[in-house]
Every structure is written in structure tokens, then in C-alpha cells.
Amino acid sequence: MKKKCAGATEVLESFAQDLLQRGRSENTVKTYVGVLHSFASWLIEEKQVQLDQVTKEDIQSYMDYLDHEGRSATTIDKIFNTLGAFARYLDRPQIMKEVHRKEKTSDYTPPEYLSDKEIKQLLHRLENDENNRNIAIAYTLLYTGIRVSELCALNKEDLQNGLLIIRSRDKERNRQIPVSKVTIEYINKYLDSRIDDQEALFLSNYQKRISTRTVQHMLKQYGVHPHKLRHTFCYELVNKGVDLTLIAELAGHSDINITKQYAKSSKRSQLEDAINKMYA
Image (cartoon, rainbow, N blue to C red):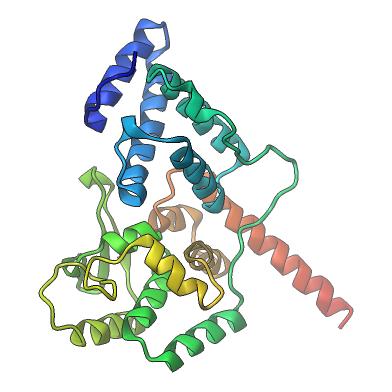
């Protein structure tokens, strides 16, 4: 029998009680609920779907998102298993069938990022097109490292005194990111061109809050994905010697191991440069 539609909090509380009754430890239950809370937030931001109305397509999209974010196969596997337990709780195990996830492998695949030359080329093309909004979006993603969903959720008031406030449902998890002067200049130039009174920082061509798909489609025209700009931000900080814990805080990584992948990528790049110079 399927559970009735309810808010995420109510559903998670009921799921937690069910797990406890089945003999799961409190730590296990806490981990499961944490995973599902993150998934529920993503569902609302990206799909406008309630947790207990999730579909197989939504789960596949989330698996792909986790892969793009650079989550390890082990982490994705744990999240997949949690979603499987939740699907069984909903009496809907079929939504997990044929969902593909990142396979475990010993080969390390570093996140893709833009080289200095590619950054200059991207920004040059954007500036030549003279679209104030698109330029501001690219600079914001590239030089703050925020997620595209976070960018779309920004309001004008979230830019304060040179800081970008990234808000979370849990206010204690809000984070502040310093914004470069040039990025602020482009954002202000875009805002000065607007005559609306909407609170959203970025709007679509239809004067509505911009969506993740719109941003992705816009950047695709320049041959880049928002994730690549986020990866570039993290990689550049690692390359400049910024402490990994600070990078994790700026990027909003819940697991420092996600941040460490950029250190691996940086080291590999440095080794390749050294070898190339030997035979130049």
C-alpha cells in the first residue's frame, strides 16, 4: 500500500521510525535521513518534485548529478542504496530498476576544468556578445564556484558588501563567498540595465527567475557546462595553495574527500608540465 503524499519532513520522520522499528541503529537512521534530506532539497530545486512523488527518471538524474559533482563511486553507491531502501518503504521498488550509477573503479578520473587560455577565450566570447546577464552569470559561476541551482536561487539582497550569501534551509549552513570586484561590476551593470522590481538576481528572457536549464543551455552555446566552471574555481584555489578546508567551505562540500580530488588533479597537471618541459 502506497504512502499518502506529505511534506518531506513528515515523510522522513515516518521513514526514520520505520527503520528504527526494523532494528536499524540510530547512526544508520541518521545517515539515511541525511542522504534523503539532501535528495529532497535537490528535487525541489531542480525538479519541483516532492520526495514521496519521486520517479525513476528523477533518481537517474540525481545519480548523473552526483557523478558530475565528482562524488566517488563509493559515495554514490551508498546514496543509491539509501534511495533503494526508501523506495521499498514507499512500496515502489520499481523506481530503482535500471537506474545506472557510477561503477566502482580503481582508475581515477579527475574533474574537468578550464585552462587559463580557455577561460580567456570563454570570457572574450561572452563579452563580445555584449549580453550583460550572460556575462554576469559566467563571472559569478567561474569566480565564486557556486552550484547552478544556488545561482538561480539568488536574490538581489544576497549580494552584500562584496559577499555573496548562499542560503540553506538550515540557516547554520549558510555560507558567505567573497566576490571579486570585476564580478560585482558585471553584476551591477546587468542590474542597472533592468527596469523590473523582481527580487531575483538573475532573470530569464521572460522576466521570470532564471532556471538551471536556461543557464545550462546558455553556457552550452559557448561549449561549457556550469559544473566545469565550478570545477575550475576549486582547481584554481588548490593550484594557488589555498587550504583544502577553506576550499571545501567556499564550495559547500559536505565531504572533504570531494575537495581532495582537485588536489589530485593539480598534482597530476604539475607532473605532466614537468615532464613536458624536460622534453621541450
